[in-house]
Amino acid sequence: DSGVTQTPKHLITATGQRVTLRCSPRSGDLSVYWYQQSLDQGLQFLIQYYNGEERAKGNILERFSAQQFPDLHSELNLSSLELGDSALYFCASSPGSLENTEAFFGQGTRLTVV
Amino acid sequence: DQQVKQNSPSLSVQEGRISILNCDYTNSMFDYFLWYKKYPAEGPTFLISISSIKDKNEDGRFTVFLNKSAKHLSLHIVPSQPGDSAVYFCAASTPQGGSEKLVFGKGMKLTVNP
Image 1: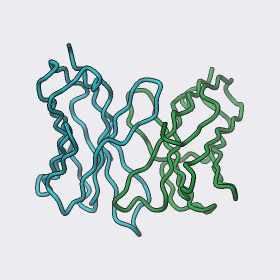
Image 2: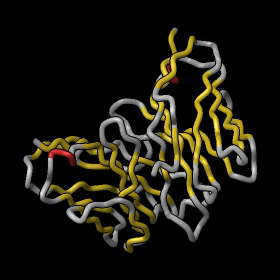
Image 3: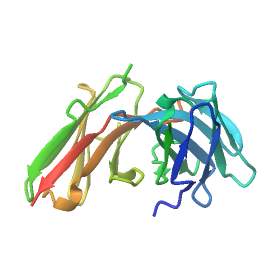
Image 4: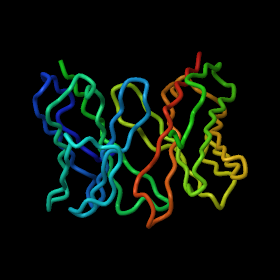
C-alpha cells in the first residue's frame, strides 16, 4: 500500500460526458502528480500541483483540468469525453519536489468511454 | 519526442538466471533515474534509483547501472524469481528548478519462468 488513494477504481461513461477523478496523497506529501497511461503507452505526465498551486504542466488537453484543495487532495476533471480518453489515470505524490527522490503512485482509475 | 526509451517491449528468463532490462535517454539534463515495477491492476511501485553522480546502485537482488556518456541505464535482477514477473518502467527527472515531473519509458514486460 503506497498510501495514495484514488477513487473510483473503475469508471464507464459515454462520449461527451464529464467525470471527476479523485486522489488523496500520502500523509504529509505536498505534491500531487497526474499521469495518463493509454494502451501500449508509457505513463504520460499531465499536471503537477504543489501545496495547492499548479507547478508543472505536461501534455494535458484543454478539456482536462485539475486542482488541489487545502486538505491537499486533488481532483482531475475530464470533460467532453472522447473514445480516445479511455485510459488508466494515475495519481502520485511526493513530499516536495522530485529532486533525488521518488513519487508514490495510487492504484489508478480505469476510465472507459463508450 | 520520447526522451526515455525502453526499446524491448518484453523479456523472458528462467528462474534463477539474470534479467537485464535496458533503458536509453536523450535529455542530458536528466540527473536522477528510477525504476518502477507494475503488476496488473496495481499502480507502479518504486524499485530502485540512481543519481547521476553514481554509476552503480545496489539493493538486494536489484542493481542499476548508469552510463552517462552513453545515456544508458540498465537494471539487473539476480537471481530472477517468478514473483518478479511484471512490467518495469524506467523513469528520469531533472534537477530542482527544472521540470517537476518524472519522464517514463513505455515499459518492458518481464516474465520469469519457473
